[in-house]
Image 1 (tube, rainbow, N blue to C red):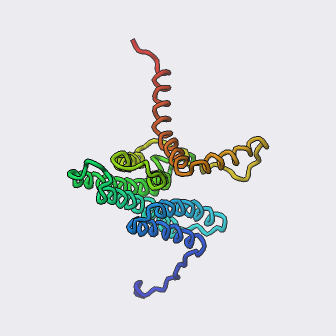
Image 2 (image 1 turned 120 degrees about the vertical axis):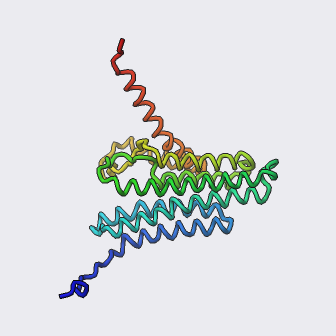
Image 3 (image 1 turned 135 degrees about the vertical axis):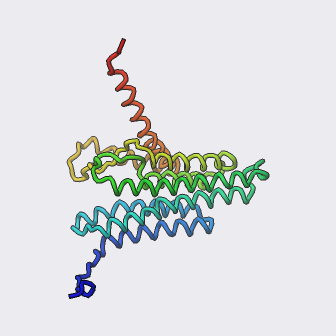
Length: 263
């Protein structure tokens, strides 16, 4: 019998987790559309929504025992759009609007050079996100407690919170905003490609018991974030992004301190 005509059973896909992943993909695509329309605040919030849905789809799949290889591949492709392409386009469109509206005083004659710097920095971010996701998918023997390199959702949160700060405060603009946008985007991309270890928080158990005094941390965190949400969220990203290089430097200095001194 010709093998070409052997009937094979078609494999279906699970609806619920992939529906959540599709919602995250929609949020990432909407972020791109909103940035093209000049609605940068909405674009930033869409990236945060994509982050929320990205954190839910895996948990939904595990709780409902509907994890599949299709779901993993689909989630990775959706992450590339929501946390790789979308943040880069948001930064590019925001920077291009600064240059086109001549908000950056004194740089009108060098707008072409700054424009090239912007799209090169955003391309670096996109390429780094692709490399980061490919390395994560191929590294099967990884420690669940740590990420190797800054995770793409965290990187996207940093870029989105930077745009949120820029749009929420009129005082943050001009040359300072443009330099900050290019620098933060490029550095975030490099951190994604790095080998610095970052806490993954995957071993966190929300069902474990807490002391009554520890519950006070929940309202305190909410209060701190509610005071100045854009600045607080960007500050949290900055601390988390710096934790990788800081831990590496600390371990390196500690190792040198314990090395035997050779004559």
